[in-house]
Image 1 (cartoon, rainbow, N blue to C red):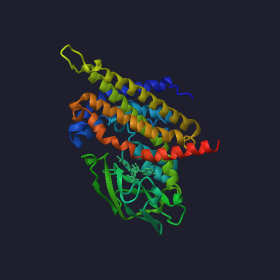
Image 2: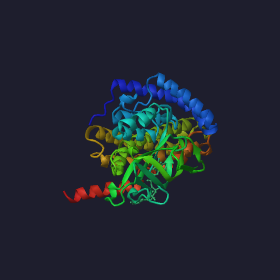
Image 3: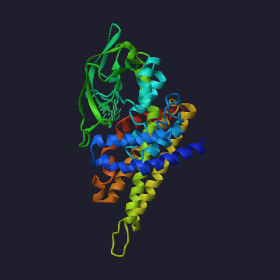
Length: 399
Ligand SMILES: Cc1cc2nc3c(=O)[nH]c(=O)nc-3n(C[C@H](O)[C@H](O)[C@H](O)COP(=O)(O)OP(=O)(O)OC[C@H]3O[C@@H](n4cnc5c(N)ncnc54)[C@H](O)[C@@H]3O)c2cc1C
């Protein structure tokens, strides 16, 4: 095992961290209380500065203007950016575009690359990933009901999706649809690129989540595909390879999410400590930090975050050295561990902030609302625990 971070990478991480602290975090007031239009303008200014610093889209392939980082380095960048909900957008590596870029890079035809991948990496357009359906269990996507039926040189897509994150304003969706209902379950579906201006692509609503429907990148749409016709050449990769490609997207994507969550956990702990040190709770000047219960929370959280971080860096290192498939146990383990650590950090920081913690005067309540989903998307906790537990028990039985 070798998690050594190169000098070059350390310099880059220091630059990213100070940019997030000095330029991105101050924009959170606008994010929480301003208008989407004003926020978009200010984000664009910061994106311009990031480009000038040569740090745009660091996680993406070099040939497309990124820095082509290893999974481990990619994770460290994600952690630094995760300190603010705006970090990934300002640096051009936000979900779901980041995952879409990975699968386009691996599977797109030359013309798909030029039309979709290049402008996506450049930040000229946005995209979305449309797999989950309200009427079928997302935890078992072989039950998908959306179909894409061949008609001459076209596919005609019909179905209802929801939680197509960031569909509002996206230029195209990568849609998972059944192309061969007679094939074995994991060969039935294909990924199809559907430009959002295709007739029959109907964005019905941005689904309200914890009180907010959101807009633009920060939204989750319900989309109805109604006789939505696209050329057959819009299939991404081989026909019937939808599940195989989805698996590829999820492994590295989980490093991205887990490291982002560790960024949230670290900032929550910093905020907790700052508040505990500043909040006087007795006439003699004693602060919350003088109370043993707070000291224990800080110690426990610090140890928990460090363990989760090492677990995640190890999984990233495994992906770099033996590949995502061989690292599936490590990847499953971090998904539920880090999500829960992050949520505990946010919740404890809110508790220490008292009433201030539940207001929108700090970023904590935003995270409390929007990061609860971490235990559900990209595989619910229970699904990861079941598959990991089953494999471990199987290995034990065959010893
Ligand atoms: C904020 C957010 C963003 C999302 N973004 C996207 C996106 O961009 N694109 C997209 O396609 N989808 C997206 N999703 C959808 C997400 O992938 C699904 O919600 C997820 O796969 C779970 O599917 P489901 O909601 O249908 O839950 P279900 O499959 O109905 O499961 C419900 C619950 O049942 C339990 N459960 C399920 N299966 C098992 C099992 N085998 N054993 C034990 N317990 C089980 C779990 O507790 C699970 O939470 C997003 C979801 C959220 C919340």
